[in-house]
Length: 116
Length: 111
Image (cartoon, rainbow over all chains, first blue to last red; front, top):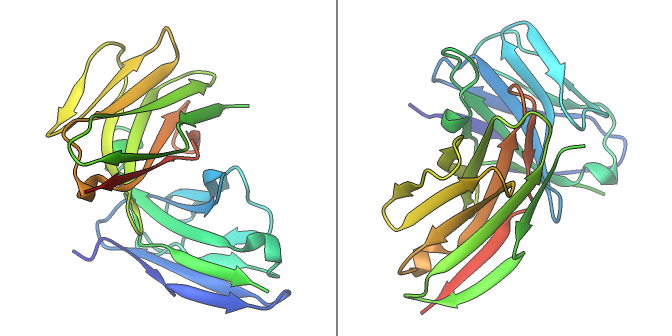
């Protein structure tokens, strides 16, 4: 199993550009989520999905879109990049079971994004 | 608004020292508290605590929750350079989306 994979590892964007951060998992996990990590702020939830076709907003959703057309993939789209979106982005997935299982939440390696 | 505060923000210790990291929280509808270790990349899960007073152990690491004091500690005994990392505390307050992370404690263990 590859676990949770993210691409790219690093990206530089200019203000106003759009891009998609890719996230995939091969563990057949129902739950997937996107976090951003900023210095002094901890990890903050952007969007999450409880299964294919179902997504919802987290704590900081503005400026980001997501979709979940398959169980495996959960891309994060930046519509018009802003310097405030400079951050490290982590994708995570977890088992459903009887409910979301946070102790089995697996994180991807992260994407470092710099918006100039 | 849910809040998780970790202390200290950073810590430098010598190999062999015992380390104690703190996490305090103010959340509605507490369900569980989680500890993660983050080295250069992704956070990896350490412990999940739901009941007060029950210590969880894994090798040299242990953690305990105090629901009365709304806090948890993570202990590392006989610290090693490989323990150098950022340690994150998170609290789940109701559902998958209600996970609040602290800012982390950066631990450096020097030889």
